[in-house]
Length: 494
RNA sequence: GGGCCGUUAGCUCAGUGGCAGAGCACCUGACUUUUAAUCAGGGUGUCGUGAGUUCGAUCCUCACACGGCUCACCA
Image 1 (cartoon, helix red, strand yellow):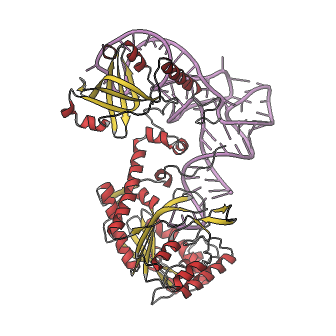
Image 2 (cartoon, rainbow, N blue to C red):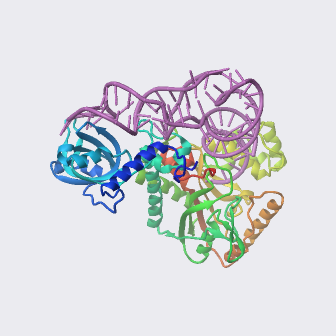
Image 3 (cartoon, rainbow, N blue to C red):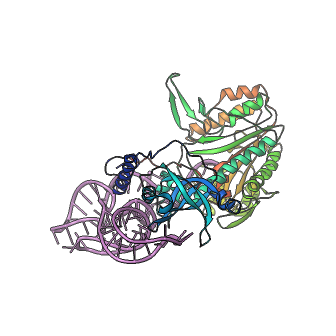
């Protein structure tokens, strides 16, 4: 039942057989259906755009046949290349009976190269009148239908190439994605950040609260983990004297798949010495509008029906302020886990009594506040228990200098003044180990090597992580993360 | 992992406890300026898979697979 691999009773077998027969008849008359190269003079869009200068001149274009209208001894076809489409016109009296006969046998999906002169048809379309043409690649399987395109979501993801052929909007999304990463890199490099690469295979995973993927190295006979974050390696580089570093790459988390989560996802993390989280906030509210301007030409975007202005300054609220505003709960009046839990139970919030106070706060945030954060907002000052890598606020040691950046109800950025006190860091890890022992299998693990790095001294540092996939969702106005990942994770078909 | 919904031709979709349907695609024929070309003909199918109920199942029941949404968790 495997189709693309060409076995037995394949889908469209009859259609495929017809095309294989055409392929064989091409070979029978000495034509190579899969030649090496083709030299073109113009892309489709160029040729159409430069028609005035090119009228009557000969051009060479190449592409996939996406439409054919055979009118007896003359045929119109549309050729698609990466730039767009161009119409070509073939006539029997120009090509001769044999070559024209083969032209009529072309199938939708075949690639050809055509040489001919530019003219305008009587309905006004710029067209190449074919003097000669070459087969460039025969296609054996039919393309999706031309009116409705390809709709079946599963097929769109599993056979993304069909989606890209049939739905121009899909290609646009991934052009935006490429532009976003390009602009982000340019922004950081212009500010003196150095791009680095750190290990994906790690003996100890860290930098986030998440379950890792586990793998095994034969020669070393040891378990390795796919990274869940780049954080701890990048901070080692700050210890080593790099003052501004960043990395763009995949993280891997062994968690459920949802509209906002893919097990592998792209993150940009940056670290800047001598900066704190206020400096990082200022950078984020410059960077995101910069990217939007570079890629979309505007700082005002539409996301799921909302018009969102990305220009600075962004709204800044504290965790406690946001909770007071959204739920009326003043955290200062409920300083203990028990008090807060009882208040939340009174308000009919669905939480269990076993959650820590920090997790209760987290629940209020994610349930009542985050979905409302449509316009760019920094939520600041988180409980220390959920932020084991962030520096405490000097006046409120139960809180840390940390912020999350939200747009469109989604967390896009997470940043803090990095904890550089190795003794405090060790205590935080120990606390995480206690949480782990108590059943929290996403708690951080101890990283002695990282603490040794900190003990050699790390300057004050502002760190940042940005979910690149989600940023692309916002800028390309896509509802699901699968729409911005070319090959999203799906269950394997047997 | 739980709940709900879905899976019918290459694609997009209708439909029924009693011979399986449409549009496009495809095949045959006509056609030398078409544009979703047109005209005349042709249905190309394991109705997701496997059991069960039934005289008879694509339809009803159960299990499974895959997908979507949603809940939980995270970025």
